[in-house]
Amino acid sequence: MGYAEVYAGWQKDPEGFWLEQAKAIDWVTPPVKALDDSAAPLYHWFADTEVNTCYNAVDRHVAAGRGEQAAIIYDSPVTETKRTITYAQLLDNVASLAGALRAKGVEKGDRVIIYMPMVPEALMAMLACARLGAVHSVVFGGFAAHELAVRINDATPKAIIAGSCGIEPGRVVKYKPLLDAAIAEATHKPDFCVILQRDEGRADLIPGRDHDWHEVQQGVTPTECVPVAGDHPAYILYTSGTTGAPKGVVRATAGHLVALNWTMKAIYNVDPGDVFWAASDVGWVVGHSYICYAPLIHGNTTVVFEGKPIGTPDAGTFWRVIEEHNVRSFFTAPTAFRAIKREDPKGEMIKHYDISCLRALYLAGERADPDTILWAQNVMKVPVYDHWWQTETGWTIAGNPAGIEALPVKIGSPTVPMPGYDVRILDEAGHPVAPGTLGAIAVKLPLPPGTLPTLWNAEDRFRKSYLTTFPGYYETGDAGMIDADGYLYIMARTDDVINVAGHRLSTGAMEEVLANHPDVGECAVIGVADELKGQLPLGFVCLNKGCNKPHEEIAKEVITAVRDTIGPVAAFKLVAVVDRLPKTRSGKILRATMCKIADGQDFKMPATIDDPAILDEIRAALQPLGYARG
Ligand code: COA
Ligand code: AMP
Image 1 (cartoon, rainbow, N blue to C red):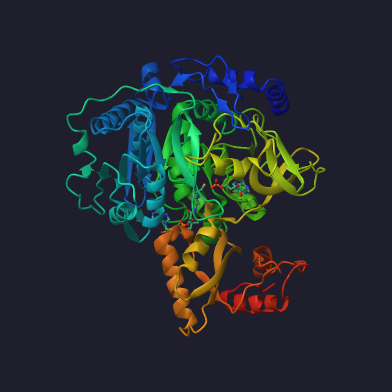
Image 2 (cartoon, protein in one colour):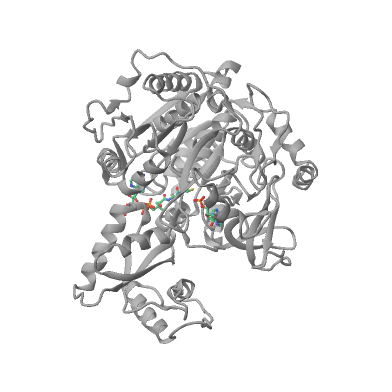
């Protein structure tokens, strides 16, 4: 069967399609019914089942005689370490850590925050929670203490598992002081912490609260897998919305298992035993789905890579890892390739490696620009598949189903909707538009298994953010179009979310930090185009009357404030001090117009603008920063 038949088969009988895929999962109580629509527009998949994620990701492979197969290959150029962990070893490690957590009181439904660098123990921590039915929430290491505190307050974890440090090129990032500061700031306090001590930066443990990763496991009884209901939350992953308060995306257990397992062959075209590599971070959804869960559920070997595409030690690192570990399918963000291309434009480094084991490159997380795709195709000599998805969906909305049928690639398009997604382009009134016309991208409800059923502790926000604008649809927050062949094109966000090096960030959150500066009266943050990172945040600040501090000093202070409050990952380094901001007569800041000016694009003078002369002031303020030069 080709893609068209598979998609049509799903359309004809969506429940039958997913019940069929569910056969690949080991259930405690198998599904009878796939979809529960009794609370529509809120939907639940496989709610009548009982299952355990860790069993499916680890135990069942050992039980099937594949215990000696590599589950995880850890390759860390920043510590010059390589380590292979078999499924049997992973089972021992995870059962023992789960035993330790249980001995300290963690039970089914309790939340556990994980704040760790890219080490295999991060996956072990996630799986140990899944083993107990505890709900993990992984926080990316590049976030500062305040962001961690916000997540601690929202998830109210019983425990926090952290690494003592992360390693960025040229510096050791001590996680423990950030963790201590976050716990001090948070109103909720965890009962205890488990700390993985790394030799590159050991941490002082607080007696009574902090426990060493290895010591806490000594003498404990390894635990069995605890069955949970199909709609039990497997994890919460916070992602940026339009305000400073991140959204806690909930992932339900059974749908996650069924959908992710299906994608490994259908989209990534790998068979159990093949090596799969997603070069991302466990703190992002790509890391959850494709470093940890999907490859393990499907019985693949997953690569945990602690390094960067360049500088660790050079632009040939990706090729080395592919060759050395026999990677079949490789997944990363376009920005990583832009970095390699910039360092090694002619692709000289790849000539030192044999990457003939690789079948395809998959790109996601941000728009894949044609130059980058063409460059990658040219140097790697494999198909390059762009695919589009979000933290909320957990897996591909639109992609190229290479394991079913490799469709012709149209550069600029992530290809076609996957089974489960009925993607529509709507105008402002919610009416479908003609092929080739730009509009808001929406998905007809219900969303497929594996996608978010709600936001943690925020059902109202879930409804308002995703289900209200277009009743009967999920609003993706992206704008784009579908061409006459059914190929989808993703053009822009419709909200204040920006994408910096494949990382999703909220300009609203940065504005909150800027507004807190005592000399700042008003501010706006926009995303401007950047050759390497796709977008960068740029802040405009208007100073309070009477403030005569030098502008450079103000800029330095707000840059430091964003780094200290949100984290280095925000990459906030551009600030323009202006006298006033362009607004509509009703007082709305014209951010979209400011973006166009910054990027040197044509724009239509907004009919409602209060004073068009301000736009010249904005242009003049942007030019010294290297923008508005078009
Ligand atoms: N812990 C602590 N700090 C971190 C961190 C972590 N886990 N990850 C990133 N940071 C810091 C970086 O050190 C950097 O700090 P700096 O301002 O002091 O230099 C800052 O956050 C920005 O990091 P990053 O976005 O990684 O930019 P970079 O300039 O260090 O590297 C690239 C540029 C293109 C090499 C890098 O962005 C990259 O590899 N991107 C791949 C994208 C990706 O994996 N996306 C995930 C979604 S699929
Ligand atoms: P995240 O939730 O961090 O995965 O970010 C999701 C957002 O990243 C999407 O809503 C898009 O705006 C953007 N995005 C992800 N993948 C793509 C892609 N292949 N093409 C264009 N934009 C993408």
